[in-house]
Length: 203
Image 1 (cartoon, one colour):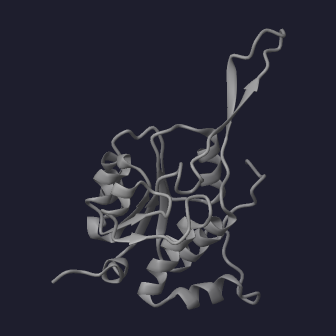
Image 2 (cartoon, helix red, strand yellow):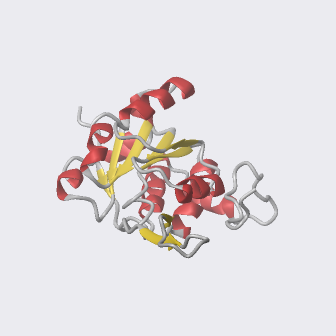
């Protein structure tokens, strides 16, 4: 029997994201840092832009019983800080071959491949997308990546695509409305371990 994307989504316990082009629009900004002695800059600071909708989606995912993480080839302080702000359970940077991180997560968490979703946009993501239970491509993904996805988000990376993936899974599980209601319930505030962080607080 061929499984639908909704069938696959109902099994998911962990959702993993690529970063550049998925949680961002793919743009990478560099700012030269001037040397103290006035000589030409030899260091740069890297900037990325993230979607607040995706951040709120991480809270919804937790309310739905899922854990979240990122797996990216690049190494960036920006990614580390954003992952800390969202209190992501899994943060893997410098991963040229992303299945290595996926296998480590499976071992740590005692889950099967069918219980993992992955959201990607480029060919580096295909080895993972071909193995996981739910492969998601963002709207701005390369066409060959979209062709191998079980679900393509309506929004592009950096514009709420991560939130799309989370809501698709929660909707398939039948708990999306419940999770939204819980996230805005003033009488039952979220515990700090479940809610996202405060952005500027780097401690």
